[in-house]
Length: 160
Image (cartoon, rainbow, N blue to C red):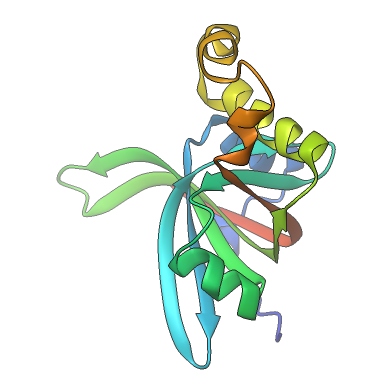
């Protein structure tokens, strides 16, 4: 893939800590996929794993996402921190991260557990309560599909 430079370099975020902050604070990512020249985009909640530089998602075990990922696991996505429209300025305050990588369907039980717990830790105010009520035994993990997006490349920018 051709790497393009950012046209408005003053908007580029190069500080890794700011990029991580957007990923840590975000709650959903928009993921784009393609197969046979057919595009597909979906918005999903995620959990960010800094150690693995990966995002974890959960979804149904069958469906359009799985069909696209099986055929072409290369994806692109974005997380947006919306700071609001600036009235009277015709401008918007935001930070956004765009990433490219490979999406994997997680099959191994230990990694499924890790992925789902990563999501709970990322999204829930009280993840332990959800663990106790929802993840009582290993059968809970059989009902869900866990996806892992290994981030290959990332860029970020901000407005105002």
